[in-house]
Image 1 (cartoon, rainbow, N blue to C red):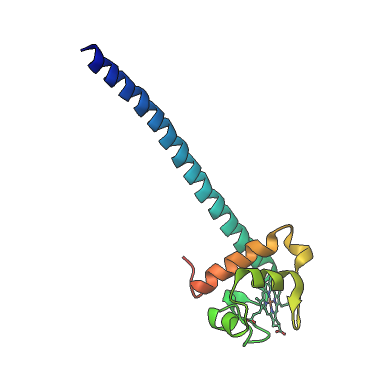
Image 2: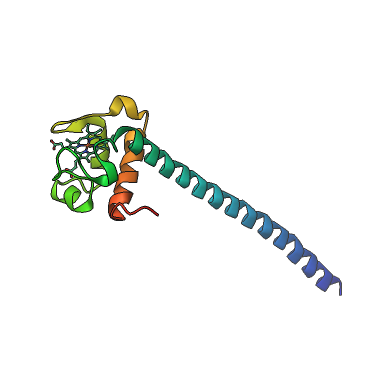
Length: 125
Ligand code: HEC
């Protein structure tokens, strides 16, 4: 009897610990989601502010063959967020760089967002 009580008590203690661990993990996951959502909207904000003037909906109003669509990025060897970030920072051909406007890490944030949109064919949602 004593042993049984002891086992039940131990189990209760363990399950309390488990519940605490689960709560911790789920709150961590929620905040990671939150951070991701934040950086996505940050990317979108940067894009609207600094890029969409010429690249509305991922196109290119000046040079049609140099859009941000996946086929164009691939053709021009820019199908990777690191390379897009470099273009955002330093420019390319007749496009000037936006390093000074994008803020610290902004080049990568906007590039990640562009890369994601390119993979979704620039269809929102
Ligand atoms: C004033 C107009 C203008 C703005 C603003 C602009 N771009 Fe561009 N972008 C261009 C032009 C023009 C080209 C083609 C340059 C060339 O090859 O001569 C280009 C090309 C690119 C390319 C290469 C696309 C391809 O398929 O080869 C990328 C990537 C790019 N821009 C990213 C950006 C990002 C990121 C921003 C915002 C930070 C931005 N651009 C803002 C005009 C602009």
